[in-house]
Length: 215
Ligand SMILES: CCCCCCCC/C=C\CCCCCCCC(=O)N[C@@H](COP(=O)(O)O)[C@H](O)/C=C/CCCCCCCCCCCCC
Image (cartoon, rainbow, N blue to C red; front, top):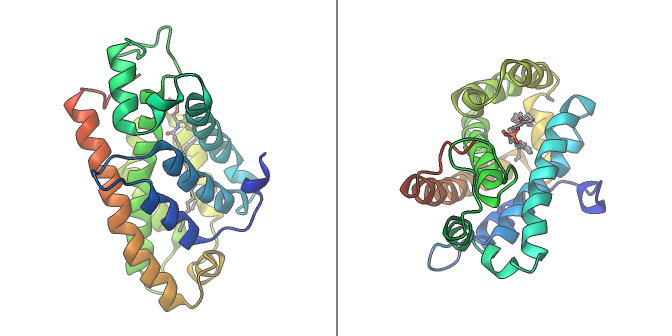
């Protein structure tokens, strides 16, 4: 595991990464998008071994994208928009069924994009919840409304078991590392619309190119 994934989680840092990933022309910089996810993985790693399989998958997907960025084709992977154009123009995406490009940038980012919807729904629930509401229920409901539709039975069951071990809301707010609970709610109020914007831009782009069901 990279050192950065062992460091202390800070919600503000994650927010800053997702903020930096949007260009003035509303292009999405993959590097900052990946930093945002890596920041979130720090929190996941602090939640215990039941979340290990989720963390492993998130790390592997961010690593695939980073490897593209560092490759000789790196400049084509600067933004989600340029990646989509490059991979489609050069037929580097398995569009209908898995084939010779099982780890294309487009399908890898799609998995994180779907997870971003879960995150958005979960954070909005956290933000508007009352002190005694269960984080496991908020997380499960957000998951069922989003990612679960794309996961097989075994993953859904394992995720469900992990959710039960989530800390209670006040403890979760402490882990965010941004100060008082009012401050956490305030930062969440900024984070949710930002994640929503990044999500919508990607969703529209993928829809336009028929990429929303990549195998
Ligand atoms: C203020 C922050 C509070 C929230 C912090 C959340 C921290 C979450 C960090 C990372 C989220 C994990 C992202 C997971 C990406 C999953 C991508 C995916 O769908 N992968 C599946 C399909 O991939 P392929 O097989 O097609 O390559 C893969 O099969 C999935 C494997 C792992 C299971 C994913 C379950 C995701 C559950 C949602 C995350 C729950 C984390 C709860 C922490 C509060």
